[in-house]
Image (spheres, rainbow, N blue to C red):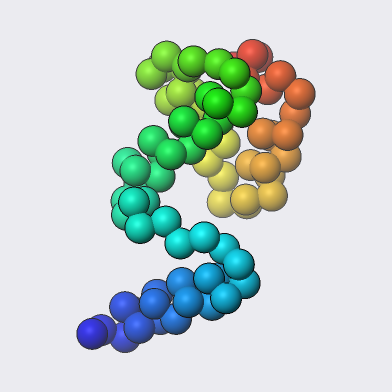
Length: 81
């Protein structure tokens, strides 16, 4: 096992200890985006087209996760995309 794998496994274990749920089904960016899209659509009771989702994704991907969460908390954010 490489040093990077050890660090990653230690981080995952620490997050699980902090009561985060480990999602074995999310292994790459494609599965992460699919999960985000399904949760976003369900919570906002919308069905986004592929182009609408691409615009949403491109708008919220920021180096600062707090900035991204602020954008998502704006009321009716998805409507003004």
